[in-house]
Image 1 (tube, rainbow, N blue to C red):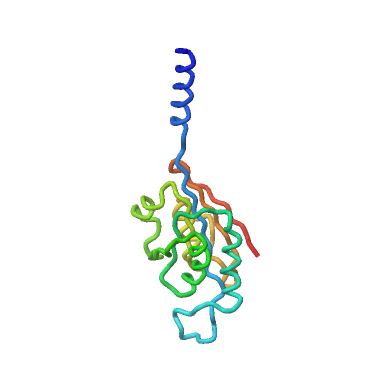
Image 2 (cartoon, rainbow, N blue to C red):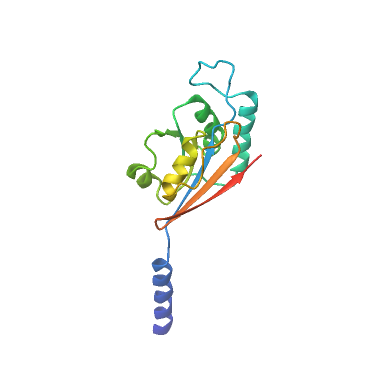
Length: 164
């Protein structure tokens, strides 16, 4: 009996010793935006953009998000909305001029998070987490990139997928 208890205690301690904290970020650019008024700095989405936002919800249907972040623009919030609604989550606003702050890291540590941004800020955000300039700005015609960033015990890695 003592031997069994010792083995169980050893296994229990081993599991907790090697347990790793994993944070996973899914980064996307907003869906297709209205371009009818070039002076509109905060346009909504086109019909195709709404379809893409719904398609993202389907892409993520098996992902249980803990948080959904968006910049404070109509096009990003409208892109995030279907996925946030499917997860019963509010859309949390972040400032793209202040990415991956200590506060953001603290609030997302150990969680699975969707972040919706822009052609320039999305790869910049990913690069900031990685600590290197790995990804260039997204072409303005590309609304299909999905960056998956995983941070395990402070070490970040990323992959880029193109979702049609």
